[in-house]
Image 1 (cartoon, rainbow, N blue to C red):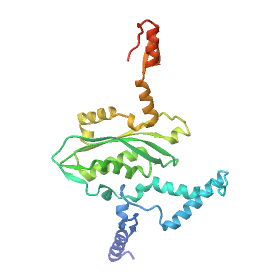
Image 2 (image 1 turned 30 degrees about the vertical axis):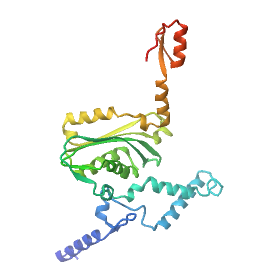
Image 3 (image 1 turned 90 degrees about the vertical axis):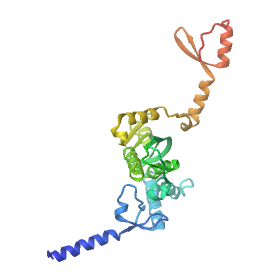
Image 4 (image 1 turned 90 degrees about the horizontal axis):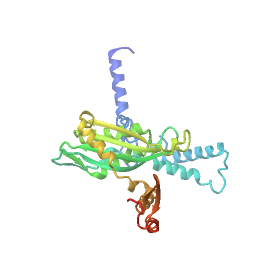
Length: 289
């Protein structure tokens, strides 16, 4: 069994087994195990059929509810296992997506080498440590090397990796590496800012803390001027339109108010209230915009 011929046959068998091992992607052709091992690869939720997988997952959720002291048979929870499994399928649909399909031949020849940047890409992902969401925004830039990609594809690449069990550090690097490998630009820069509910709802319970991660490749890493230009644009990114109704309402409110200085104390009044107060003082109020 130790002969060179036997060793060669064994090696050939192992190679054949590797290249013929397939992984099924949702609605996609079969892919080799080697491709599936790549960080962007399609891979299945489990080796079971979808029906078997759903049944097993729902049974697990039902068991969890029971162990938490709930009654899975009560009206409000009867369909919860099915709903939860469906939701988790959606939250992790990035496992079933393929980078080549997402880019969909949307890479074009263009005589350009100036920075292209897309800011404020909203994202939602799942913390793989606690299975609760983290959410925020991504900023992506690259320096084309004669090739540009459709802007919406930057969003789709972000979604592909965000819709998985993640840690923010890996998510940032995966997005940058995927774009570097696909476009071969002079460089790629990615910055992600997120609020993690695993740190807001539990543990240290700091809901206003924001985690910022970055990945710089090529010129963004090697050239301080390029990196500083990118980071300056990130810092100047408008936030109101992605901050939700609460922030928008706060900004709108601030435009209707004016600060009044009274013995060194800053008092905030509505513009109408300030005008009335100014008139009361005989037109000598110290209000400022």
